[in-house]
Length: 271
Image 1 (cartoon, rainbow, N blue to C red):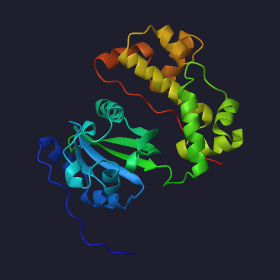
Image 2 (image 1 turned 45 degrees about the vertical axis):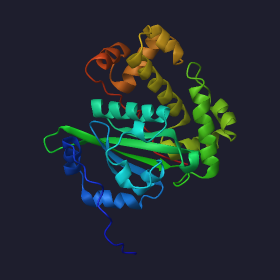
Image 3 (image 1 turned 30 degrees about the vertical axis):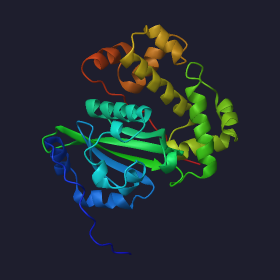
Image 4 (image 1 turned 90 degrees about the vertical axis):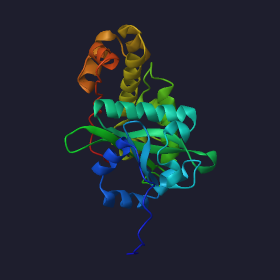
């Protein structure tokens, strides 16, 4: 085992929000995050400012050092459309206290080349239970268990599903888009997402429905149609089963008090 000299401490965090978050985090755990060479790690306070980042995270920004990243926001470091997505994810985690698990997203690599990552986020609370920030990891699929063929096929599937949220594709259509057999697609989706292909499609539809409910005033029957449900009753039953709230309840909560989105039940990963 290689022993490394002590690493330089992160740039000092001066705000009260940053100090509260640092007190809630474990220094040893933060040091270990630098060994995650294919995984971006960060901790953000409740104002959206980065308090701790690892070297892999720094390499995905225009900056060269942690000191230049700490204290800044996503809007100051990433392209506007990416920053807006990260902020929306953060807001949902902070407002609801619910985790984000293995969200497939495109992040630009050094030099501007995009790459597929799986992102997870967890809320951080202090000793009395108050939310003081969040921690996030984004694992490069090229650096993890997924080989090149898996990354390519799943990126095609993700785009294919997003283009057809109002008309959910069959597994056969997904496999054709992925360029592989249905059984191979099933293994790849389960290995990366711990979901079946059908569950992956359903999660994408429900996520889109939640976004429409939270940000617009479309009638529920229109939201149902835009997310591929036969009618409003079917939409209400499915949405309620997966989130614990009816669409109307979710919309009211999104306009006032925060409302959680519960992750889909995941089957055991299998071959």
